[in-house]
Length: 228
Image (cartoon, rainbow, N blue to C red; front, top):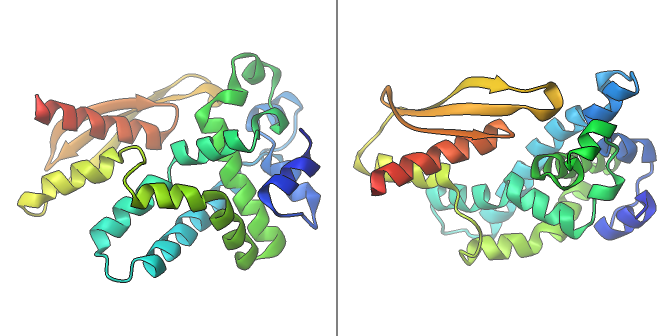
């Protein structure tokens, strides 16, 4: 697998290939090689996350002109998540071309959902910088078209945060908050611990390799407690 083959797989050829190189460079690699943080994919991941969310939101808005906001939010959340990104990344075989530090590589980082998902978001951000919004949109819709169809057909995994919110607020407005209680481990291998509260009362707890994953697990825990 090469960067050239990857570009062919995503249907986009970079004018500035250094953007793709950066999108595929994990922070563990830059630390190991004494490079600045600006050389890793974290900033591109931040940008890609925003545009991925916007592109999917716009597409759902156009496809479902009569759908209410709550369902649009639920569909978007099912598509715009680490699991969908990681799934698509594995289909593209992105793992082997991500630059990782030796420790991260040895611990199985190339197959870790969070690293693959982050790299995919960074690629989206890189496409946007290289070719503009139209290119980013075309790339996202080409890669995630089937995922969108699966979400609309109810074939995707549950979005526990949305499910919990809908269940709690069915009886009226409620103050739902997710609080990061602590994080453990080195920068490249952190575990996040989150609590979920409703009107100040803790209803669930969860942990994960990302804050988003920990929040989903906290919501899942809360839903499980309510069903017992």
